Length: 308
Image (tube, rainbow, N blue to C red; front, top):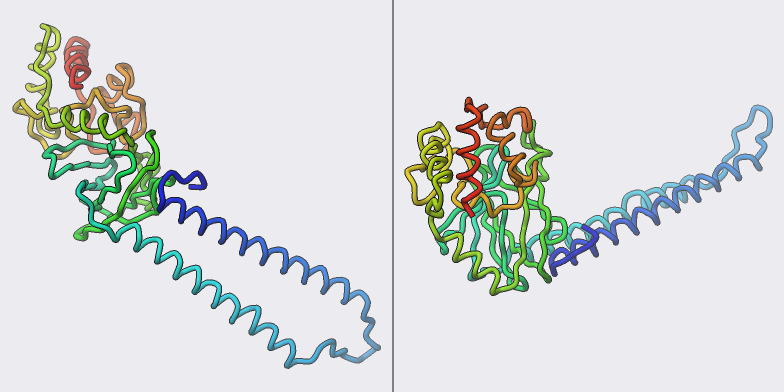
C-alpha cells in the first residue's frame, strides 16, 4: 500500500502517511506529558493531612476539552473528509472499459461484458487507462483490494458498487479479499495484470476465442474424459458441452498464473493435486474430491494444460 502504482493509490498512500504522522505526534505528546507529570509529582511534597491543589480546576478542564475533544474532532473530521474524497474519486468516472467482478466463497469471477467473455481470479487491464469495475457478491460480503492500485471497496449481496482501477506501469499486482467471508477468506486472492495496450488487445482477442481444438490423441482423450466426468456440472469450457456455472470458467485455464484463487502456482503438479482433492489444499471450498484413476487424471490434466 505504501508503494503506489496508480493516481488513486498515491492519494491513499499520502493519507496513510498523514495518519501515521498524526499518530506519532500524539504518541510523543502523551509520553512527554506522562514524563512531565511524573517529574512534577516527585517535586511536590504535600503537608501531612492536607490535599495539595496543583493547578486550577478550570484550566485543567479547558486543556482536557481542547486536547481531548475539540482538537481530535477537528483532525478526525478533516481526515474523514479527505478519505471520503479519495473514495469518491476512485468511483466517480465512467470509462469505456467495464469489468464486472463477482465475489464467491472463495474465488473471483471476472466478466468482460462488452468483450463477451468470462475468466476467473485474474484481471487484465491496459496500462495508463482507467477502467470501471462493477463489484458484486454472489453470497456474503467480500471486499476488493489491490493495495498498490486502489482503496478497498466492499462487495455486498444485492448491490453493485463501482471502483475505478488504473495502473501507471506494466506489471502484476496482487489483490486480496479484505472482508472476512468465511473459513478460506485468507485464501481468496487474485491478480491484476497491467499490460501494454497492444499486449492487452492480443489477450482480449485470445480470451474471446472458444477452447482450443485438441491437437493430439492424448488431448482428445482428455477432452472426452473431462466431458464425461462430473466437471461439466460446475465448469464451463466454451466450445464444448461443458456449461456449468458453479465454478470458474476454464476455457483458457492454462494461460492463468495461479489456481485456487491464488493458493497455488498453475503448474502440472499443483493442478493434478487440486483436481484429485482440492479439500486437502483449500478446505471448505465447494469443489469435491474427484474419484479418478491415474489414467483419467493424466488425460484430464493433458486437456486442461492445452486450454491456453
